[in-house]
Image (cartoon, rainbow, N blue to C red; front, side):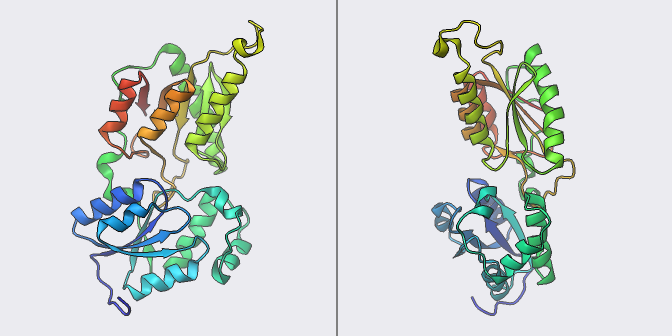
Length: 289
């Protein structure tokens, strides 16, 4: 609807991958917002088309098209929801002139600097990015043990060590997830994302399995893994908010991870109670602090 006038009940949604954008879309509708979706061709699920909203498909590199689209729709408020894989920055996607200029201006190409710069460009064009979690506050993890099973003593040690490591990692905006076994870091997240990090940790532990080497002393590490996923020390709740859901729990089960530690109030359980229900079915502890 070209030339649409600005309306405070209209909201722009920049949709990445996963279920986060779909959940936010439903929540915004429930709160009376008319949502216009900017769907990223390389990331967004086609399911967004079934939501009965205006959807504009654009490539990850088309920052100018994003701005023009929102302006033509009268959008002055927007949210980001859903992951855009960090490695896409270095992919074959061709940035338009505006994004290319922005990328050249960055001292570092980590998530905060890139998305923060995009947020500033949008603000300069009269489009304000808001906290995505404001629409999904009931899904933010509450403090305490969220599963039926409490952590074991070893899992508590893993969580304490993992949080210390993850906080230092997050200071540099490298990743938000670490995987620990017996207070030793097995894998840390970089560009690959949480689930891929957990999978890699599982592969490393399998490679240390005495059964695969024929050497009973091949590994002094327990097979049991603890996954720690935290928010950054200065987490910007407008973007890159930590999220976990049923797929993460199932990835943990496949790789021998028995415990998940997350940040209370700063991590979204995208599948709500289903996340902890699945953890209970698989004997996985979930703890938030």
